[in-house]
Image 1 (cartoon, rainbow, N blue to C red):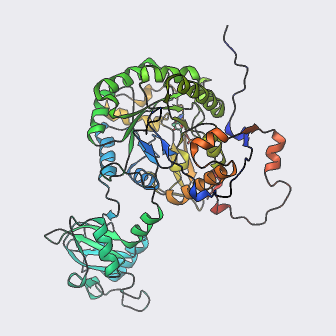
Image 2 (image 1 turned 90 degrees about the vertical axis):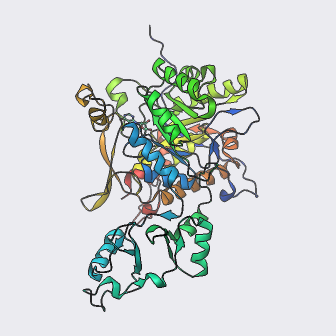
Image 3 (image 1 turned 45 degrees about the vertical axis):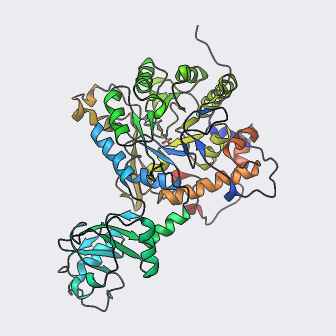
Length: 511
Ligand code: IMP
């Protein structure tokens, strides 16, 4: 007969934290959110850590180049999706590694002969107030000048005038030479009181632009996740079919961490893949396994000390219908608690601390806080990032509201790439495990994360914790009744206006 567990499958929203002593020296901005992504041997420093406990899901509609860059700049890590040909995934990883923070490719360009009317239109479409004037109107043409919205008056000047009548011509433009360091480029901006510095090669072609606002942004975000060569860090997902080709190509491109992307990692296929990677690349590569939802699954993946971190979750994802389709999975809180308890025992037995990632089903900031309190070392999120400006999907207007498409990796849409790759038709998929949906657009990653992380830091202070490890140790959680959920809301007062637009406490309702 089947074994029936005595405990119920629980979700994060069924728990609350109890406050503990806050010391007068504690402040949210002093809280340290750094967390390991690689196994921590007793009293040793982990090989790889991230500066905030947040990674983005291995999904087509989430982790592309732009999101990977923005998240690393905030201190987190993206796992670029593997549901695409190897060369395309490798190219994304390369682009993140090649991204020179502060040097951007000019994406609003024009020519000297273009009319001011067209420049006004270009500025409106791009949202940029500085436009490079090049010989052929491209981002790499010979620079002829710079035109900004301060160089003309839209309602006074003749809009049929040519750009060359208004621009700052090249002989008056302050520029840097290709190869200049970011520090020197910023110094030039400072010295000449400029907002934008073009970088030119020896032939006078435009190579990049450096903006004062990016320097200020960098100062505001000192947690950037950089490798030893000061390049942004990026992760990548792999599958159990083509890892022997994919992993070497990703490592060659400079990837910082790899994880298996699977809804069920408690399989011999995954173990074969893990062993192959360790045999061929040793411990140099940071390697995650999963997903599992039980102590038994955790034990299987850490057997023979093979994985660095373990991902937990099955069926909780916002676009996930695995539980309905197959009757398998586990409430995310129960899964996490079971695995964390086993991880802690394993640490006592072996002296090896295995970071745990809670993956999927985090519907609001509170749930992130509870997941971290329950013992997750970091969380993986899909919907949260799909909603941001930087996710790879186009902004779409529906009934006057802006949305972004978001679809599961278990949908036909996501699996279609294989039709073109190895001839496997998506029609061979007997059923889908995910849905194809839309999520409301919420703005740039930096802004959304700022609120979330502030709440996390603030709650950590409420329980007297200065670091995530202290938070896990100090946390006391209680289960909530249905009535206490009602009490926690604002059901007994009427709200005529609200600032919810500024708040990230219920991502699903943001417009
Ligand atoms: P979210 O943060 O709740 O949107 O969940 C994201 C997580 O859902 C991912 O990291 C995956 O673990 C999982 N996931 C992605 N695609 C699918 C799918 O099609 N079916 C089931 N789970 C999925």
